[in-house]
Image (cartoon, rainbow, N blue to C red; front, top):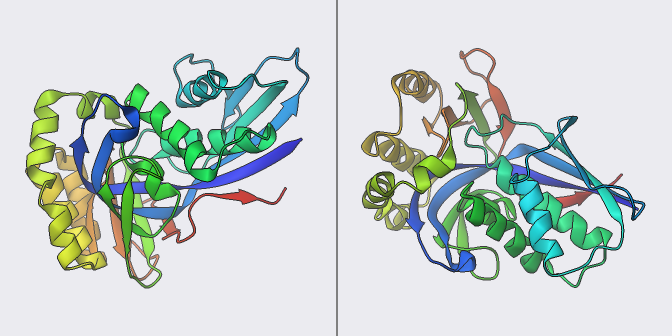
Length: 289
């Protein structure tokens, strides 16, 4: 048996960390945009005596604490899976650069295993497992719930689908243009008390401001303010943001990654080797194979 799931990427513009010892109640509030390039996860069952194998872009994932392995572990704590299986992630955007790829891999894995083994999970429960894996490893806080629905997403309440709450900005189809200068260790930021305080002080009132004026331009403006006030944006990214800002309806830094991103009415940009996609309005879904 075989199945395939597409989970779009998600770029956070600004956020506020909500801490809680219960992973379901831990997460972030804020806003971000979902893009139609993401992660395709393909799962195939194999013989019971075969090992579980995970590949990312064709290479075997040997890390015992990877997001996919943690998701599998959380599912195996609840159910005995009666055969081996293979998981392949095709990641269409840079990993560790603020595109929410860890959440996308976790969600694709959880949804796929739920289908492959006919587990008694509804969509929200499968998403909760993936969210918990993210929170436990510190790889993300709010990407997952946004990736389930698509659009320009306002995360009103932290947590996975079923606990968290969100809304969306009404918008025409827009292009997402991005350029990355490398990865960033998300856990080193969101688990650092100094960064947490600065992030929460800066992001606390931004969601209310965006709810009063829910427009793409306002979202990008607030995101730029957040990047500057938290001092997370380095000189190289600022130069890229300034360039994109002149060519689009607004540009900022992806949270959290060394990546500049912008929303635009056209796919055109003067930056070299841009990542260009469109806003994804559908969210995670199964693919025909």
